[in-house]
Image (cartoon, rainbow, N blue to C red; front, side, top):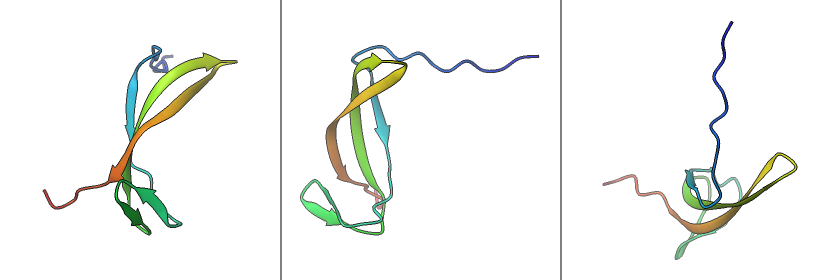
Amino acid sequence: MRWKDKPTCQIGDHRERFPFAWTPTRAGDYTVWLERYWIKEKLIGIAYGKEMWVEVDRNTAMYYY
């Protein structure tokens, strides 16, 4: 039997997410709605087994490049 371990994160690591804006959301200089946008986050700590991420940057997703 085998399984893949969760990757371990170090404090200061960055991650990128591409959530969907179901409601009007501010992203960069635009307000987006019913489309994806880009968020960059930084890990600031781990408490009680939960990772605490803080948002560093938020922008619109560039689809046409």
